[in-house]
Length: 279
Image 1: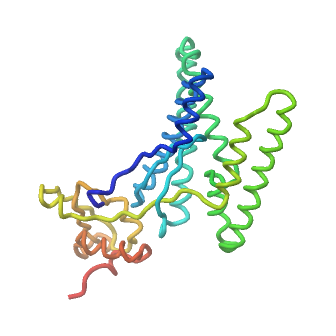
Image 2 (image 1 turned 60 degrees about the horizontal axis):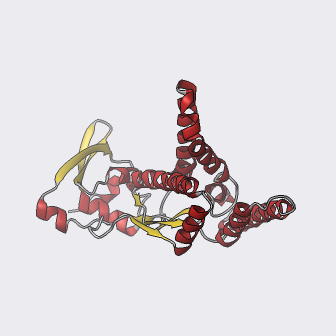
Image 3 (image 1 turned 90 degrees about the horizontal axis):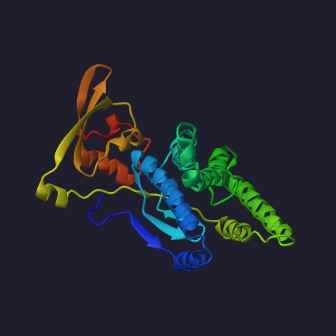
């Protein structure tokens, strides 16, 4: 990836406002815990996306959590579902860790209960079938066989339905104790229904890495594998050479430049055999 390409962490002004308000209401530690859980969630998305050759562009801390951005053009449905599932699963794993900790060391419960409940809440909330939540994106990916327009229409309708249900809950809560978090969540769903974070395709420039020297990584792989299959082997600190085989017979070497040429064109379904240069 280009030397200038870095994962950027930005803070929305409203995040700071909410942080100050929670400090005055005695909820600052809870707010910071929720932010850490949200960052874990987004980093899990980024980690799995990176395994498929996509890089997290930026993380923006918002009052209701965190948002990612970039481009996932060319990713397969199976890979997209894996990327989307990574966030909720990371939160679920964290919650299970704390539950196991309580079982082994019950005295830790008072110090870790908030962190466990926050992680568990993020797990369940993100499975709701509404944009920009992971559940909504998973549903849209699963509905793609119906056509892009129909899938988008169904997801948009469900998103507004969920937002309306959460708003109704807030209205009912006003007769006892107003659930302001429900109001904020409902507004977030309504405005985020047509959006959603993405990932940006990897781009490599070896000018700087060659100047300081870079180690070569040689990977043996079937010549019938696709460009998409080999994306996971790309490393910023390694020069990639693919050793192509037909069964057990050596077919040829595919240099990183030739492989990246297919990546830049978006030929993700092309076989590595077809990427070999013709002399």
